[in-house]
Image (cartoon, rainbow, N blue to C red; front, side, top):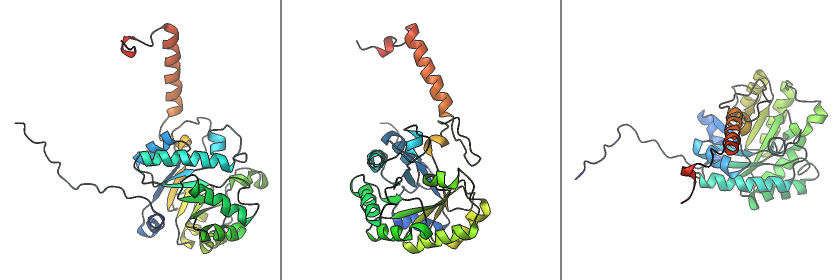
Length: 282
């Protein structure tokens, strides 16, 4: 008879609970920072889910990161539905706890309120997301946010730099108009948004916006005072070596490691070293 395995001492960590909308919103009052990463496929979504992210954003950045476009503008509703469904499957395979938020791409919500509600609904009905994000706040899209939220679709607003308007604003510039951004954020909350992304906003302005609203602010290039942070997953992993804005911290260098591995594979195939005996079926 073998001795039983020793019982580990210390507290047993509580299992992660699914990130529901009320739990996401309540994190602000509890002082718990929210960690969000973008994902576009099932494999990445599963890994990020297992790592413990609070939410997975299926961003229209898929147009740049995956499709190779210079901007997000060419991305379509059908493409976001496709990628969101893949992310949901990966999230579920990894435990199913992170919230999945789908971006509304360019001209999917600006043309009419009816189009906005219809396209937002597809992200939940056809793709399985729990929420959507649109670029804009209460000043310019308050009616749209209210209509989408009124249809039962949780809405994350997005203020500061809005990449879908990159041509109109003349490039990627830090946004510093405190009064305008606070008004946009307060209006988004009043319209029914459950959260707000702040992009490329200086530290002081981001703090003012965060303190002005009762819903979480999720920063990207907006300093430490936001209620959470989001990064593009590929950028965080170092898969885009030519992209190095000041706000980005690379937690890995998978770009260099991928190059090394692929070069080693090519060399071994050409030299006949791969496949070896251990890689060959009897």
